[in-house]
Image (tube, rainbow, N blue to C red):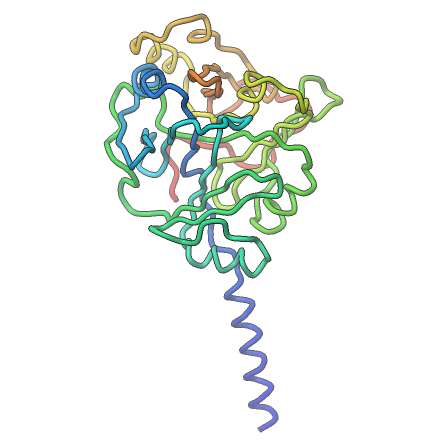
Length: 296
């Protein structure tokens, strides 16, 4: 009898531990930005970047591939300091992940509904978790005019990286990918890769509390991955991209070639090659690089 009770107790503890295992988080699902001018925003994301769109209420969605998309929603009044409203991550089990976060005392802002729920990270950023699906997550199909078919990271202004690490690394299981800065002695960018994929979230550090909208737009950004930047620049040219930024390729401090564009509300949309072309500054990469197509 005593042995049976002990085995039952052991099983209960084992079951509890199993039930609180974190479900897989496989990558970025979407980035949602605000738009003050719907027509100008549609011109940038639809024509310059070459994505098709669909509407879901007030939100316009631009699929990047079957599992990733960009969301654009009207700018509220009063306008917030940042034009980036939310970052979404894919999970293989949204219901189990919601339970896991509750068990770790993370407040659920929007409970699970239609395959997604949301929380706020320690700095108040809206983070959405989306149930991964088979087939296209949102319509329509990605056209040949698209400059990229892969979103590889998003960046957020971060004031307290230690607090953010407790959430992203200790609870969610994100892992270091690379860190660097404008010089070799100051860390201004810290990349945290999702636990079950190669996409990452970039902490943008050392940002002035009096930063302008343009400066915040540089920091709160999204990044589209490309294999060869020359092909992306050629696609921009075919899409009639205007201005010097359309061809201003440069190698970043991480050794990767990039081109930076800005939407009408000054949110930066970075295009970045998947792999570095030269040795990075400041630190070595500590995880695999993204690719154009990955198993999820």
